[in-house]
Image (cartoon, rainbow, N blue to C red; front, top):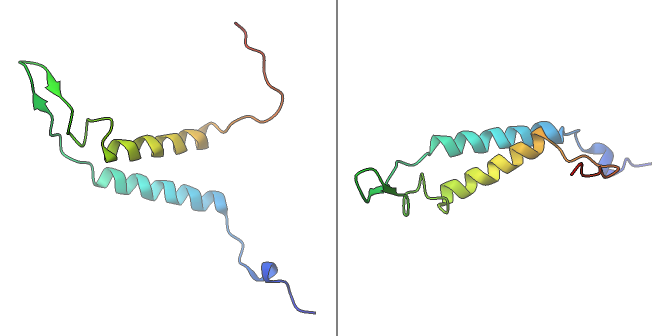
Length: 88
């Protein structure tokens, strides 16, 4: 009797693999942190529009928010079970 294809696959630690991917993404993201390109509007006011580092809609900050969300989910996984009552 032939072994099933699934029994021939090597065991993979999915959680460790995901951790490694998140660490790799973080290293790549912070390794390519852009320079500040804010423009000064007034004596002490800066405009972040167009600045890759400080503009919240820049591709760098979008990736940073996504990575932070993944890390938060790993640190505080959702609790499955009975819903809790709101104390308020």
